[in-house]
Image (tube, rainbow, N blue to C red; front, side, top):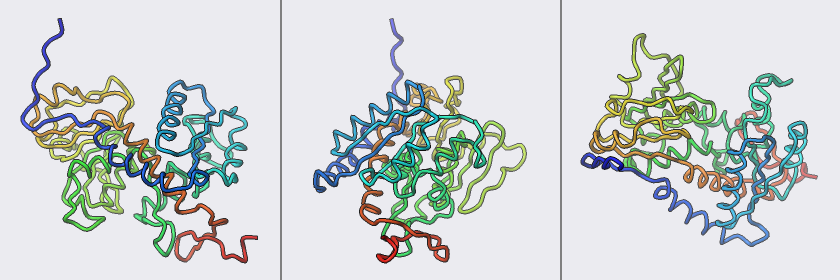
Length: 341
């Protein structure tokens, strides 16, 4: 017989991804419904590995996109043909967005420098980079540049999972809308465990750019991110000390063996688990830490951000033809009509 489930501490609750994603899904469906059937955005997923999880994610993505009125196509290719398939998708005018299911080559070095997977990320057209991971969008994110163009008519896309975490924090009131945009996390302390280039580092920069003090914890180092700056924490500082003073804790360790001690969590904090494994004991957290809001999974919010990014790319670039780089303004713009031929 199973042990009875402990009652939640006063004010503590589990928050589902469905609750947070719901208004975004409605917004996406309404925006898509306004587009003619032959003008709806199309996402192409390039699958070049045998990972069952990647295939499952592709199936889930396709089902969600079709439900919400957008097109989705998986193009399965051999690894040796992936670069060519990517270039074809970049040039295909029927394609509004591209994503690649990583890892493909892991840490295999690239002829261009860095890893092969990194080179692939930087080869996706900025007009179709639905994941916001190419060099252009990484550069705008870290520089806190929020628009693609000088006229500030086209907003940048942001990496889907970090963006999902920001939307979760907005939903739960961690962002203070009494402050102007760009300062709504002022005075807040955040700890993020795992500094991956896909989630942890960009999320730390995004929250720091919104005014937070962010402690970024990884296996061998801990850094403080503040707006435009990163520096190591003072020697001897422990993760426990940082977590105990944090209003927000984000857990992203890709291992079932990592478990944070729930006793470290500050009362009233928001805890977001972005890892595929739960990095904290949910029952112990909710039963012992009053006022805590715990989000155990973010996948449905991430998919909603993927759809949102696709709509943004479609709005930004559909029909604009070739883009040119303005080095003086550090942005892009459609080529003049005389140059499009």
